[in-house]
Image (cartoon, rainbow, N blue to C red; front, top):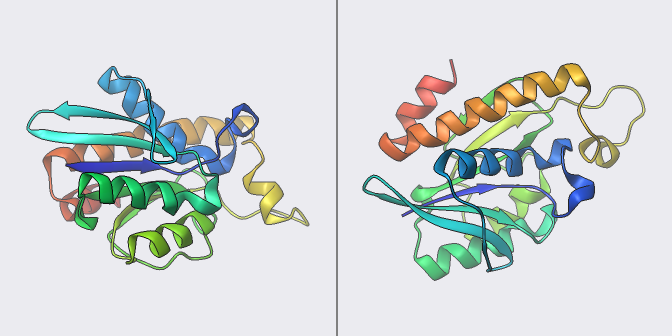
Length: 186
């Protein structure tokens, strides 16, 4: 069983914001698989699906970003999911808009959703897709920036990155993550 988690904040006011790009990837995967996230449990909303021989859970934590790990930890314990079968998709200020980077481990890098995940999962050794949102220009505070929406030009690039990230998630169903990393980090 594999757990795919998109990080974000619940509620319509956060739709389309930089911090919610992980939610967008999970929505794209749900659309591709023809499912809706209709199970509300473990402080999140999710759907379980069978894809070939692999059972998948698509999860959007509803705890708000800074407490995402609470939901992820609960789902992992309940379904007895190992960290090697966890993939987290989230926004990253240290990558330019329109760039994704896959990694198998790493620190939180200042991302509160990842800090919470590390605290509740007990390790920083888990698969991740980091989607670049770039750093704010000028005097815009980081919280305002990540809770802001993309410009029209950025939105076009981000739509492509949502597709590419969903492609990487689908590839992971069939291939080891290291192979997916090598393919999508080019």
